[in-house]
Amino acid sequence: MSSLINGRKPSEIYKAQALLYKHIYAFIDSMSLKWTVEMNIPNIIHNHGKPISLSNLLSILKVPSSKCGNVQRIMRYLAHNGFFEIIKTQEFENDEEAYALTVASELLVKGSELCLAPMVECVLDPTLSGSYHEMKKWIYEEDLTLFGVTLGAGFWDFLEKNPGYNKSFNEAMASDSKMINLALRDCDFVFEGLESIVDVGGGTGTTAKIICERFPKLKCVVFDRPQVVENLTDQSDNLTYVGGDMFQSIPNGDSVLLKWILHNWIDKDCIRILKKCKEAVTSDGKKGKVIIIDMVINEKKDENQITQVKLLMDVNMASLNGKERNEDEWKKLFKEAGFQDYKISPLTGYLSLIEIYP
Ligand SMILES: C[S@@+](CC[C@H](N)C(=O)[O-])C[C@H]1O[C@@H](n2cnc3c(N)ncnc32)[C@H](O)[C@@H]1O
Ligand SMILES: O=c1cc(-c2ccc(O)c(O)c2)oc2c(O)c(O)ccc12
Image 1: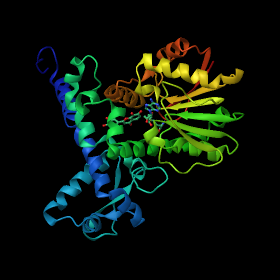
Image 2: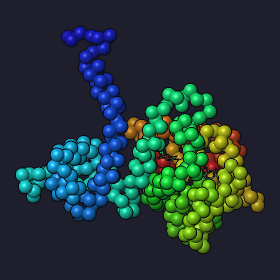
Image 3: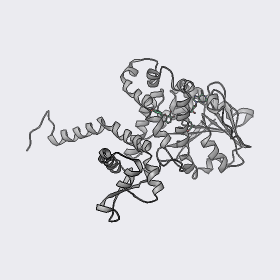
Image 4: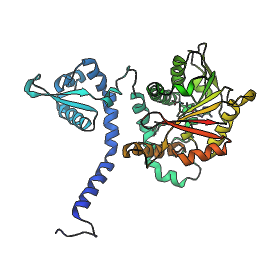
């Protein structure tokens, strides 16, 4: 039997070391993804219409010969992680390998219906992602968010003063909202019978447009900070934009949508927002509802990988002073904001749809 070190078996220690290395170098996962998007590789493969050989890819990318091996190695790593498929066929000279898109890299093809490339570009911007070097400082700064420590302002104020970042963030959010198109197919029951909906913090209107298209009789108002909605020109009969502050007042309607809003805020602020929503859906004696699209952490029920994404997002939300919540935490918010009842339905892999009733 092999000897123990501090009571641990060598095999256990080797496994722990592999785990550590995986996490030490996890930033290379993010950066290779950013590289793929910057190099436009998903579009190149997509335009090729079939798996592309390494030499063909290298020639389109005009890679200097000294760097060809590096491209091949990054592609091999990305393929190992599920972003490309390596195809070995006789079709190419010297049994050269070729690359095909996978479901994950199809989501990075710019110009396609569902494209998350803007999310990659926004999140991995050096200034924003670099903020995570200051996590320790952030913990000891009593009143600052992580972005507050590094950007010198709250995230929303920072966006207001930096139009380039504002645009990049709005595009990232809009790209994610397109995924909702898929999910809403099974959620028609939530919107049926409603006359109006106010999408609070609705960004540039991606979600609202999807809802308007699906329910042409439903009147949609996109409500967001003035600088987000001020230059949007695609109003229509059933889609309008209103600028304002959700902590002050929210336009009336028989329903309010809060998609990816409450996870940005601490409990106290969520309760303030929810109270304003309650006022908006109970105006004129109506008894409407508030529809929340956000995550519900459920470590017992969810697969480990889904919990991994939810907990990762929870730490990510700390950068804005927000958090992801489990059902008990949600329930507490609803009660404190004066809502009587709620219903949670699954929406996508990790998002849930919560209806709350005044
Ligand atoms: C995470 S984004 C979500 C955008 C959109 N609902 C979506 O799912 O793509 C949060 C949104 O809240 C908006 N927001 C932040 N503070 C706000 C305020 N005080 N009043 C209105 N909207 C606000 C931001 O401008 C941003 O568009
Ligand atoms: O996916 C998101 C990403 C970010 C975000 C942006 C830049 C970063 O560098 C970062 O670490 C996080 O912010 C979000 C958000 O605020 C939401 O409400 C919902 C989703 C996201």
